[in-house]
Length: 313
Ligand code: PLP
Image (tube, rainbow, N blue to C red):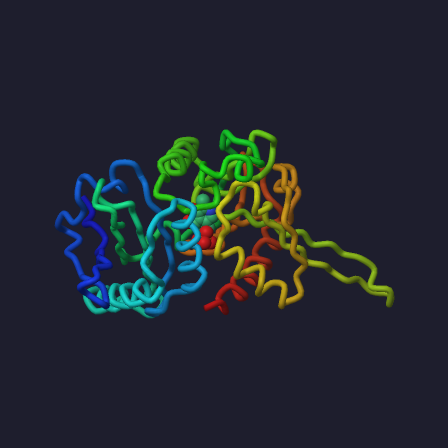
């Protein structure tokens, strides 16, 4: 048996301005908490590099909008910032990284509706090391299968109670899709809608790149680099990584596009990635067994986007 990864917990507690440290090896949650019983709550997963959380403001803002979608009380961002600082500092003190390159932590924020009848949310920060598999997939890339998400791409607007754009604790379906993919020998999933649109991964945003070469009017050629992601209103979670990378790519001269995308667009792309805060850019090598793009171009574009993404704080 492998020993569990070292976890630090910090609960948001009005009596502790910087958060209350709690022992992760002991029970900490009431069995009647509605987060445990109904998955009624929201969360965020963020990456801390060298002790500093990347895209912190974007994550805190998305936590606010997820909580708002569920009519959930959410402590102010200042309280979250203090508890995060406490948790990250404690983890780095208790379990120092073996080298600066390994100094990466997953910082999870959780808000549940709390114990039934108590009328106040349960909120905590969980800090743990980044898993080896995710870090490896940044280098090796991944094989993906397309799976039907079971709804059409207009559902978010038509049925807001389905909470499509919120990062809720109800991830059982996403995890089941990943297990299904692993049983088929794949690493990950891209969901499609019942009307044939590309949506997102169970824990990531889909990106594709197209290179277009045209006459530059001066006897030479000009290459346009275009980065595309599915429409944000198609019932997907707005990714903080995609948003930040798009801003950096625009400044670096890339053209940007927002779907709608169909599976054929992925198969015809020069490169496809699944992007998220912890695993970062995972290049997609195959979709349903079909090779995507060419390895040399994929490698070059991945290096370029990784460099842009590394500059984002
Ligand atoms: N889509 C889903 C369903 C996710 O769960 C995630 C991240 O966990 C993402 C997209 C990517 O979001 P981010 O880039 O903010 O990590």
